[in-house]
Image 1 (cartoon, rainbow, N blue to C red):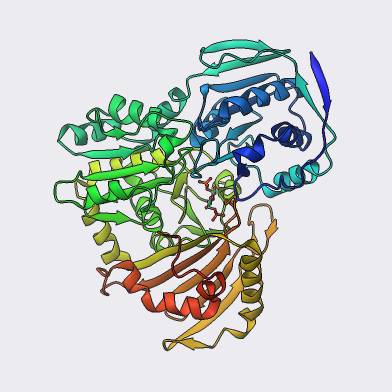
Image 2: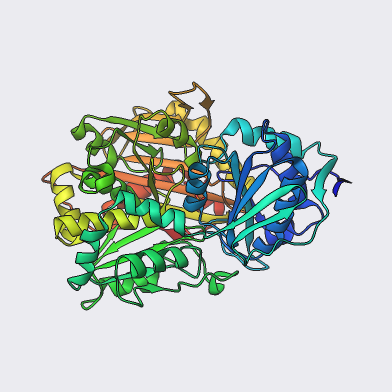
Amino acid sequence: MIKTIETTPYADQKPGTSGLRKRVTVYQQPNYVENYIQAIFDSLEGFEGQTLVIGGDGRYYNDVAIQKAIKIAAANGFGRVLVGQGGLLSTPAASHVIRHHKAFGGLVLSASHNPGGPDGDFGIKYNVSNGGPAPEKITDAVYERTKVITSYKIVEAGDVDLSRLGTQQVGGMTVEVIDPVADYAGLMETLFDFEAIRALFASGFRMKFDALHAITGPYATEILEGRLGAPKGTVVNGVPSPDFGGGHPDPNLVYCKDLYDELMSADGPDFGAASDGDGDRNLIIGKGRFVTPSDSLALLAANAHLAPGYKAGIMGIARSMPTSAAADRVAEKLGIEMHETPTGWKFFGNLLDAGRVTICGEESAGTGSNHVREKDGLWAVLLWLNILAVRKQSINDIVTEHWATYGRNYYTRHDYEEVDAGIAGQLMEDLRASLPSLPGKSFDEVRIVYADDFTYTDPVDGSVSGKQGVRIGFEDGSRIVVRLSGTGTVGATLRLYLESYEAVGGRHDLETQTALGSLIETAETLTHIKKRTGRSEPSVIT
Ligand code: G16
């Protein structure tokens, strides 16, 4: 039976960089989930009788929210819901399931790399029929709707048994519980040379994949250990847990310090990798060599033709604005299109749909291709494995050869987390106000050639997104970028991105923070981040 329940709006349901991320305790407020999901459905048209995909990263509250989502979908007239067994689907797998089964869209329940558990974060994101995150025109409409919502519709029914594969009925709607891994693993087999990778593992190549107790555990175990024959134990922390084993499911050098140390040790494995809460981010570390996400994007783009799925070459590359320009040099050499977009995977969707780019990436540990419309952690790991299997060189050799060919973009990101939102907002405003006076000024004898607030005009649909981050560029190719994160849930997170370019034949062996030392000082002079936040150090350096 369909019931219409009266409700009152919440004022804080504005989607961020990637869906609505809040503390679990916020989501637990009466009707908070219901309001948001109803507001999503109210902002869509034409889904009557259509298929909706639902899945999440298994974090705390996933099981509660998913039952609500199914019942609200049934009451609103969807014809079928495809849901991952146990309520699980990684973000890239959800994207693939939407595309593969020609669904109308999907709900992804995740707060990505943010911590989980009763005191952690939860999130809901809506993806459209191309499998990608809803574009701004939809997320803006959802937010407007949340501000005025007065009721939601829900079917009165018992909970769906998500442990049982197969179909069940909820109201008049069919719910099909599917294997969360099968479709995705099948897709990976079409893109990569599994035989060559199997031979690599058979030759004694050693790898460690840290699933951080998050969603990629089942995927990595099935693909790496199951289909590719990597020894048991290659995947560690492979069973998803609602609080990620009490850890922080962000695959960076801070939260994966153990893995990093192991890879830097004399008898460490050849390859270390990790993925995040919902499986879309990746960390790539070779023996003795960490590969920055920006470099990884450039390297994957330069070598993608070695994998069967990309053997015809790539059409173009896109990167988010704060990502280093390393990939630009690859695009130039290949003579293909290069696009610079705002932070947020949703901005790649149109370029991918239009066939203008094949590979996309972000400094925030995300890389992916036109195989889905999300970034994809395991995909990046498998492409690296494919490249290693073909080139038969170490990651370190491949990286240093790349720099010798293209030059090196030294790159780092300094995050100041949980900063007072008022201070952070004022700092950005003041910085923006100072921009017109900066070009022509010199720091350390290097002249500023441009200073602006990034505005993106989508070349496919002409939509314009402003205020996407401050860029200050110098005549030697170095760059300072400052923006506020759109994924934090407490206070504000200030991100400072620093990049310099060392041309072919230059010094490529410096430690990153040392190489960027004077630029880091210039950044403080221009932004006063430390002074104004009262912090002596960034919270996280990646
Ligand atoms: C999300 C977005 C990415 C973005 C990242 C960081 O990733 O999908 O496009 O780069 O957040 O965004 P911000 O700098 O605004 O915090 P994820 O993995 O959290 O879904």
